[in-house]
Image 1 (cartoon, rainbow, N blue to C red):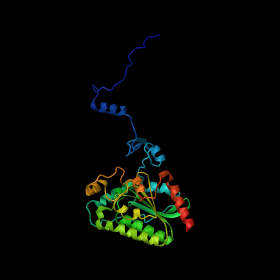
Image 2 (image 1 turned 90 degrees about the vertical axis):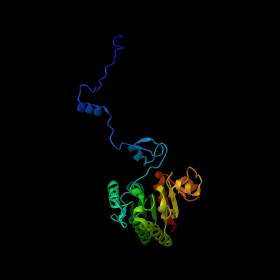
Image 3 (image 1 turned 90 degrees about the horizontal axis):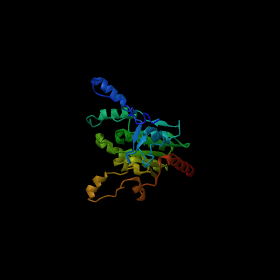
Image 4 (image 1 turned 60 degrees about the vertical axis):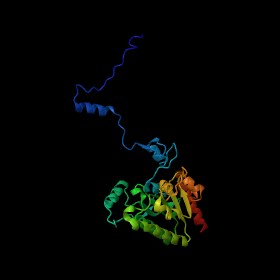
Length: 294
């Protein structure tokens, strides 16, 4: 009955000799587990490895630490605008190279290939729970959402269209700031967009800003902080200069959560922090109330 109970188990192993190098390599490759590319993602906050499909089903929010991972502009529009109602503005408007900056054209072209969009913002008109609005959504995947002349022009035109149609404006911000390859042409967009928003405000129309990670530099210093209502996603980095630059300038240590959305809420710079799953409903409610008031 106990016969063979302690018999050694034989395993088939891949031995380098007497097989030649090519056969050995093939067998070694076959022995390795095959995992398709793009199947898993890593949370950049807690380091958790997450099944990509589960992450997408959870609206790109880490199930462990609740970090709101970055979305593309197209993904953001899909989550926010009622299906079938989005009408894009100025789809083919793109940046030139006014300063003949080396390799700038190639970098823009590569970003267009990587993201499938022509510039770092998508603008248009659509409905949120049947409430009509003009929307501009910046994309951090396109040259870190930097604001060049085309980005400023697209946002300005969208605001002007909203003023003409007497519609509210919602801007989702995410940016590394002004686009250095365009120099002063980029910095001029801060004043241009702000002026368009001033005219929109003078027409007694609503402007809502949604700050997402990261919103920095010239975008923060202009239209990102001009909203009648300023919302933010949890944990978003929001600021003008970098934390280390400020510390070196003022010779003081800043709080750990300095420039995070929660810090700005506590100090009155943000009106409300809204999780991604509740954001569309919140925006729809704001638009509905505003429509009823006016």
